[in-house]
Length: 111
Image (cartoon, rainbow, N blue to C red; front, side, top):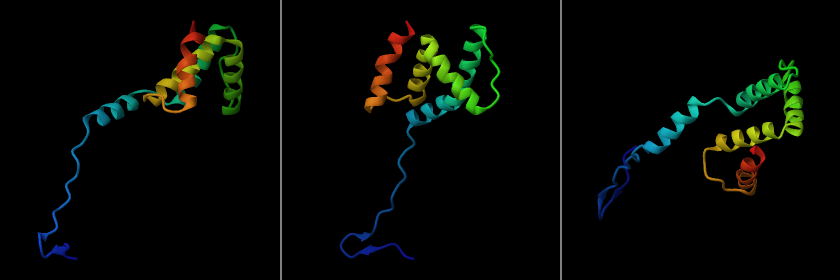
């Protein structure tokens, strides 16, 4: 199919692709180097449970989820780690209420 033709201006100009944004490539490469949120939280739960002298091997995903919730309740340091990982996972400025709440609560809980 031929390109549309305008009698006044001639052939329609070809659309050019926008130049690649180097900052997007940088952030994509940075995210690729970090573990996923689920993997990071699982590793943190294992380390925290081990140093607390508790069972550090989890049987299933459900067991891992229950132990993460339990550790977040009994250990404020683990809760601060979870919030810090959630904050870093986004790697963007906070936009919504939930992200702003995570931003404001993580530092005080870690101290």
